[in-house]
Length: 471
Image 1 (cartoon, one colour):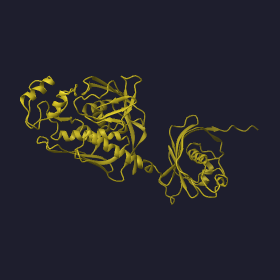
Image 2 (cartoon, one colour; image 1 turned 90 degrees about the horizontal axis):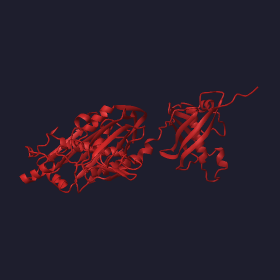
Image 3 (tube, helix red, strand yellow; image 1 turned 90 degrees about the vertical axis):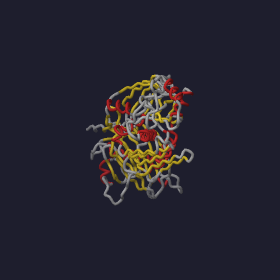
Image 4 (cartoon, helix red, strand yellow; image 1 turned 180 degrees about the horizontal axis):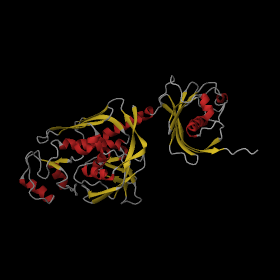
């Protein structure tokens, strides 16, 4: 898996609202989109429920895919999220809080276009946080023989989707749609509305499953003979006059926006459902006969793959032939530590927010004499100290007189996952989580041996200038 750090995260520049009817409940729904902090993701907040519980848009929270995608957590659910999720992806929004006063997102015209329009109205705000994309090392496939669904994600240096639909329908035939660049989403995909077959619509109406349904928010495909009585039944249910089957097997309620609008809408659903992976990734997606249940199952497979290789992807690259940024003598000029307590050997990378050090562990370390004799294991506290010294290279002011002392204030989420033994080469990575203020440094530390994490911790320290000695 390969990392791509070329982009930043984005939120909306200002709050924006939209209202409409929930297709299943028939209730008027109001949603308010608000800017959110980096790394928040897409979060729904049910403001109509006690304590306003939140539900993160994540595939692990999907609870139903019967007729749309529904997520649930903390005693709350939110349904029909796919069109809004697709619009957020298509407009490059990573972080947003969505306040909603009902259990489903309004259907509006059955497409993503109304959501894309309000996002464009709100504007996109670049955030001071990297958007880390992951690319695949191998193909990921999903097959459902019963539904004749085939989906594959191929390694690719961008995000591209191809969909193919074939419902054995003489009206729809076989349709194909493609999105080669997300920049084209608003123009080529967002306007495409959902569709259903006439016989499905009859069932939904007769079973009171689309209380908020309107004949203008879906393309109705008539691919089997229907009687005048059946058409009148639909007309009466939606309180519409002069409903009839137009040429081409489509009810005369709507004109197609694209000849392959149904295939494009299926592509739209794929964009929205795969957003639930929750980890930015690049791939070429090919989906044959996709649907919400298949999309979600596929998203889970992709997420499992990304999580499995995520830590490996985060391993710093170390070329021992490359000259260090700081050798041991430069480190001594920066840090006040000396033998036997100087626990890093060189710095191989440093920027404003991150530093990476190398520590070669040998049998000659003085602590091995007294720590588990005969079973050499580097003490965890010294691993944490080595991380702290690495962080000091980034945060302690340059001062040859060593006029500053550094004190731990807090260590959280400290985990030791593998033993460190003689012969190991440690790669110590320290990331600055917030700007240094009043000498307070908040950093996240990770230690790697090979492609494995051996330790990690969140640390807070304070840099204090030493008082001047009195004469």
